[in-house]
Length: 137
Image 1 (tube, one colour):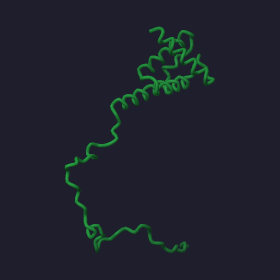
Image 2 (tube, rainbow, N blue to C red; image 1 turned 45 degrees about the horizontal axis):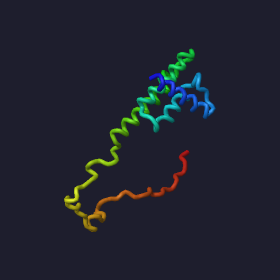
Image 3 (tube, rainbow, N blue to C red; image 1 turned 120 degrees about the vertical axis):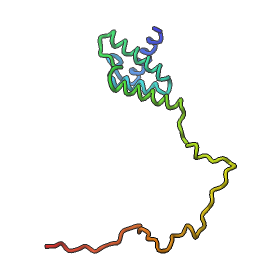
Image 4 (cartoon, helix red, strand yellow; image 1 turned 90 degrees about the vertical axis):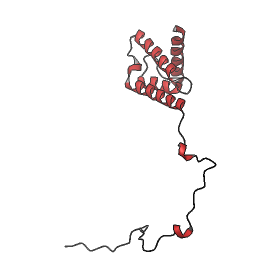
């Protein structure tokens, strides 16, 4: 367990160093961005553990704990929600979008039925132009 936490801190410190950011004390925005960077690589549970390890190092060094900041918490919740949605699978199509092959083909309307009926008023596509009235005095 201790080695995982140590490895999480080492990964975070290297990630910060590579981007010119301070690892200790880390700004909450930096921790949130690191969590987003980890998202495609790690499950949400492991990202949360890594953030706890980063917080522990901050606590032992006497700095504010960044994982309690609202930005970091919102980011972690968003990561968990996205990964939960991926597990359930995205509903790209509704079941009624697929018609079985043995279903009868829909009936087509004739050209006469599609033509506008006489006597029915149709809205014009653009309004009539009207002359401008002179201002009343």
